[in-house]
Length: 351
Ligand SMILES: [Zn+2]
View 1 (tube, rainbow, N blue to C red):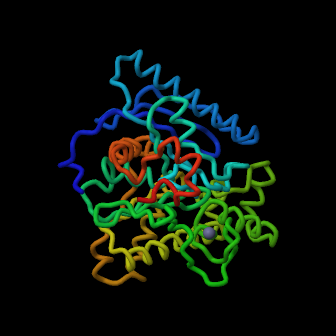
View 2 (view 1 turned 90 degrees about the horizontal axis):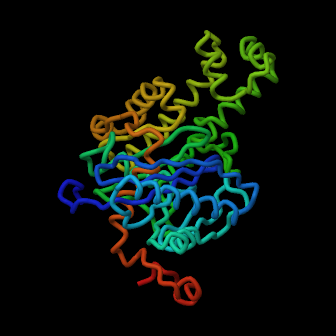
View 3 (view 1 turned 120 degrees about the vertical axis):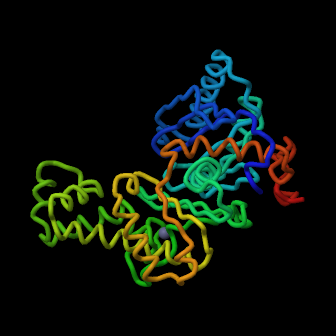
């Protein structure tokens, strides 16, 4: 589906639920962001408190947009950490939201604001934003990779988002790059995320300190600095070879992951986003080198490696196409009865 030939989109109310903060905005058809609001998530207060905060903040944004004379939103898009079920609107069990298990977030938000609501994994929202309006624009085969504490991803194949039957496709950070490598946050060995992202870099830095391998890092840590990826990067920038080696290995793991994606999916573009990619341009160069080294020549020559264009707003802006495309799609329709009887009917996404 080519974005250029579609009917113009209608404004939507966008909600970005993160482990740290909740953000809301109205997105107009020109993908501009209006009436922004943000509040801390505070998941330690429990699911109901967080859902209440989400609904309150979304209502504030809706009212502010109305007061500014913006046209009314036709629906609500909710970006959330996965795993989740986009058809039933359920947040399944995200590791960074304590106590959340099969929460019918889309229905609760829809009832509170009296608008249809659609739920999607944050990285799938992001890839839609970069694909329609950002660095992957004009392509039919695109991958978005976000690198921060962990590594997330979203994939467009033949002009369509790759969701899989359970909505879990696109978790590129959990590609194995080292058979017996360090354990990932999900407890499994050798995933790219365990080596290439912030938590893995911090783990290697602590191990380096324990064996007395970096005087510079030890000095920074002794000043009370938190031992994290940013501190490793600072020590590396100040000339510390051991810290530089940790980062080089991290970027190589991301590069190997991308090379596998190039071989499997033949993308036109891989878009790199997230806090680490934004601040470390060397990631991009290393990814290019690893693709050249590890991928087949033809798809390696094809693929472009681009930095994300829309920053943190991807998880808000992506709701514009998602809501507009799903609002008439029977796969995403949830009647009130489905909430009570979906277990007997095979789920709301059943035909
Ligand atoms: Zn993993």
